[in-house]
Image (cartoon, rainbow, N blue to C red; front, top):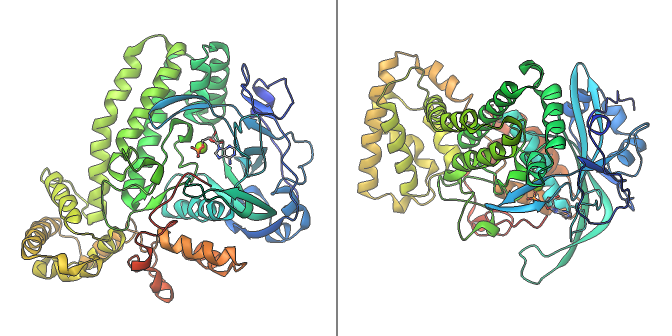
Length: 520
Ligand code: AMP
Ligand code: MG
């Protein structure tokens, strides 16, 4: 197994001089060196062939004992020094102080074919940032992260990736619903991969501690390695950097809205500086289209991170990042101007995204109303988002009164579709038909284009749960089948059409399907 190691983060940025691995405050440092915990009986469950190839490894490499030992933390790559990063963050709107990689350990950075990647183990044991927790991860949450991050990539959503999923052979105690019922579960480790794992919180922690020297070091490092096209750091470049971070995160959240992904915990420590979807925890996929939905039971009361609020939260988080970068720029005007741009740019890009979902290639000022009315109709009665948009590509604008029939499968409770609701839909289909006709695009072409942005297969909450329940009994076939299915989410895959189906009734209120906690 040969990797080209190109460490930069732990070579160029200040380290924590204390090597003791106990929970503590770490100041004046970007990271702490830490050795992953030895596991009892590591076993590789699955590996991503794409990610293997990206970092320059082969399937043969992944079958070796050293691969499993390395990607569960039992064996270190030659000439590397694993470390946990120091960051802070706002959790559910409140400043939480130091958080840091409590159960993530960066193994090394590698380079292959001019691409730069950081390899990080999630669940490989405690670090100085573990606070009161154990630094471990359980199988169910590791499967969810492993499958979903690769699925998101194939959907075209910016995301961290995953290389491997392994069991540790150790048991981990978790109280899934935080209701005093702890139980042992199988421990697991995911090796996740991204150019870097720097978060908004990495900048925030230095700003909060008024450690401007290290704030500047980290910002300059980030620009030098990941935004080098902006040129040498200066006040003007810091602003351009902030603008690009704004645009990247904006694009990310538009993709989430396009595919119906709800992150669930958009705390500032879970916001990537590269605009990648990061930290797959109690996330979920919209089944019934509902702007008010969040899968995260911890957020049940205020629903801060609900589907319809995600774009506003990105902006809120960007305000926190602007505050953190302010000491480097020392004037608010430029930062404020960028933050003010967000709302308009979002509105434009959101409309463009929704037009693409509707198969509209030109823009018309009336589209905003068409989109708004569609969103209202979708909420009238529980309507499966994925099935609705996928089936909409069969719409025939000459037969708009057949529209409702075309999307009928998307309704969860057809008894609820009253005459009033039918009328609303018929009127919407009539307007949609008129709009489609303005474009003079062949139906076949429109359908093809729509099917490139409206996925047929997403990792529905209950489907992930089926894979988890099988895996907990030692059967990993469904993990592999889903992994392959989700590699081509826009293709018809007739042989897999059983996964193009509404959530079954048993999954409606089941833990792990529509209800998830942060316990992982
Ligand atoms: P999250 O919002 O779930 O991404 O995590 C918030 C913070 O808690 C981060 O600093 C994590 O590293 C830390 N954390 C979450 N779970 C654990 C765990 N089992 N052991 C140690 N730290 C954890
Ligand atoms: Mg996190």
